[in-house]
Length: 280
Image 1 (cartoon, helix red, strand yellow):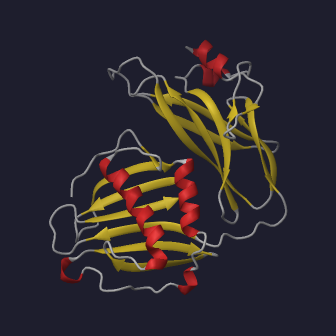
Image 2: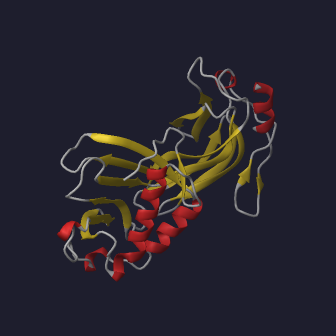
């Protein structure tokens, strides 16, 4: 199995029509990585977020040895490069079918005001971070969203946290801070594109903190959280009734929450394998 990993991580770099860089089969793998369970890498790309400093992620497409395995990584920022070690692990003694499990991974590579550093993955260079001069601070970022119902028992409140491509959905009872569940996922490239489109023309400074009458007559309340130039803001709206200027961001946030709530991956979200499906 380790020889197969070696062959998959060896190519000179090719750039596909989609912009993904494909790894080839002659990369030298360190002994400590070769001794671990593999993660078979098919393609990689670098993602730059509109933030300041600029956050960079290594996107990896590949396969796990079995559906029971989970990806594990280690990132080291050295003087001459950013070194990423990627492998997989499974709980001892678990019974699992010996079939490959496709996986998409977003590995955070840190935030950089300026940088010119190659990125290596398990010993093979897969790209280079190039950030020149002074970066322009991001105009707007969606940092969270949620909904709640007052006259409700059980799962009555959901809060979504967004940090780069990483998503965390927490469900709670209405008057409790104790989580009923915590589900996680990752935005796909299409999900990131849709998020950028939803924020492209949004000016947080022009938004009101409150719209309508959230949860009046038990109609439910919702909110969106943003950051703009280092400032955070929250905007409360009626559940299912956002104002026109927030409608696109609201609809996207609800779609992301629905995917994490039902544990069904789609074009926007890759849901973690340990997701716990919920019913309202």
